[in-house]
Length: 403
Image 1 (cartoon, rainbow, N blue to C red):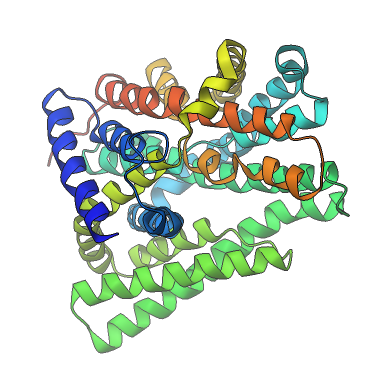
Image 2: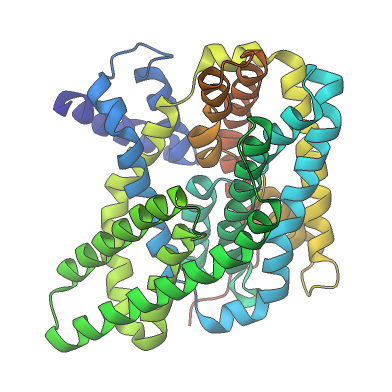
């Protein structure tokens, strides 16, 4: 496994440097390295590396979500509160409904199977979107109107909504007893419990840091450790059907420390920025390793067309969310583009319906189709979405001049 890790680091650093020379986001090259070394490519990534890949990917995602939290000021959130809530629900709903409507016509799925696929495709990718928004915050692009903050907050809640809806539908489809009312109520409950627990954890960490004054590096490690515990707590609570949005809890840690002591928050953000150099490599290489090219090819032209139809409806929902806002048409276009990439959730649960069908002795053809389209959505939207966000951020957002 050690040599695999060395290969990933060296090759990802190399392609990152090459891609940046051509002003292309380095994460696209890192995704490519993951695909190349993974089972769908040369197959040189050993099973141990693939097995720990899920945990490594989550830890890397935690690092960037913590960085995002340390950039979320109350002032910025107050500016975008209404639009953030709308963005958390409407675009994913529009996309899921479009997939539900067109899935039976284009792929031969049932309405329920299409709805399950719609929920999987409805999630925006925090792995792609969050690091780019954090960078735009540092570059002061769109910060006057809180646009990066808006997308960070909305994308985090969007994933909660989509995953809860997916779990409800897959339960009904597989014949598991599902209390629909409880599942719907669990969406706001998960958001509230996640934020409250995250704020409490962040406040406790702040008081410990304030009292004992450890080095900034040790503070950063402590914050990462607590965030990992919260994510595993979320996994445990999920098995007990207790709603808890772990990723929101992670971001809330950074938010409360920023509110209490801005200087401390900036120090921690700088340390996490250095850790992110390694974490970014791991995150995108391991996401790439999850991509099954054969499965994507099985989706074919109709699968790609269905994804594009879903994105059109998603974009319509995104535009609706910005009506009545102070954003210019350029800024609205940027928000639409930023809400397109898919990777994290699709890689995590794209194969789950197939696994459920196998375990229940059900026909597996619908599960194979769902997996194929989920994988194709990553290939079509993650690299192109990252490139589009990079382009749009520099051309559509106003950069605040340095003081």
